[in-house]
Length: 387
Image: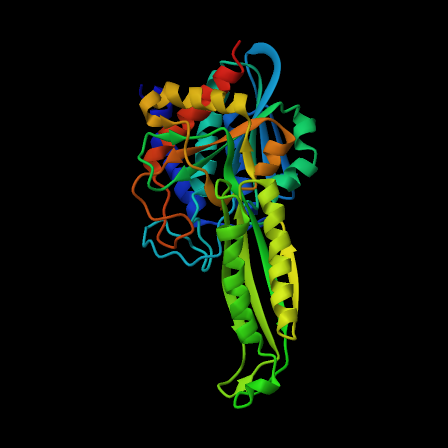
């Protein structure tokens, strides 16, 4: 079951858009150039309504079908890049030092633009499709900002769908699951205040480095012994800062880390135990531990019925053997979760082939995936808004 002919015809043009976006990345909400490019393309396609500035720098385009209907579905692509120095050496590499599209949001935006052009030409559906171009997915809660700006109510969106490329998955394949598909990515920091002194007299100190090391080890017990082993949780310490020289035991030490969970009860447990373990170990060592725990986006939960709809559209493009409907969830986070809390919908993965990993300075979106992505968006729209 091949991609749609028109999607294949658009491949070259959409690739040029993708590479233009790749050359001109923006971080978080600073995607004005990409948003302006998106707006210009939507106007050129004859999209019926375009609204800018949603969620600060987001763009929404509305295409009305040629058949009567009042249903509205939302299709979302993220636009922001990452603070990384690109090392791909590609001729269309980022022009901006320290900024690059290392997660494929350039490809997501280009594929949705390709679908927009196709749908504006054919309009073979009833009701309307809302094309959502979102800023600040990478830690800025751009999805929440657009939801809080009243996007769902303003356009009457009833269902919402997202898509992300996945390196290591073959081209022409999709993957999805009901329920939690992406984790809640929380972060925490721990400040340990001990008692500094001469390194030759440790008995006169409350050494925050030793205490911090005990806390690091203690936190591993959350996944190993506190959480139900059938409910995944990851607790990782990613920074440990202390001291200034070789012969001084410092007064303070600082730890930071992340918690990834797929269940709200496990999430609550992890936060509670981090506080108990850190504070308990510190008290036992005559020190103080202060824990700052910050919840980011929630678990990305696919709604059952909408997951079936998304899988059906993918199957119609690439065949049943090329769609994994029970993919293992990822412990990475995704702020599309906020949109799925506001409306029923589903989030699907599209194969990016044998490329570097996401968030890697050598990563590049695989342009051969474009026609599959366009076809998926079109097929999903025409099925969910069938006349």
